Image (cartoon, rainbow, N blue to C red; front, side, top):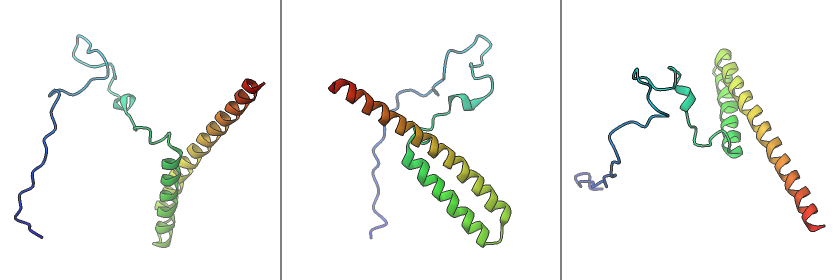
Length: 113
């Protein structure tokens, strides 16, 4: 391997040098978030994709098992609570998906009649 080789990276064109704001700026110089930055938090759909939620749930279950085997019951319980949260979200997404498929089947039957 040649470690002396210079790497050329492509530069991305920069559209502007300013941070994007969530809305108009008030005259006193603050934005409309009222100090809570979580209002504009975007997960990029990570909590809406059932496969990502399932994978995250399994990850926390494994971390809980590892913490329990290392003799840390507090950390294990923490991870189990995280896994429980993702299990609830997984069940919500399953119910939503089943409701959507049931609705599609009923619409398909009504169209065919």
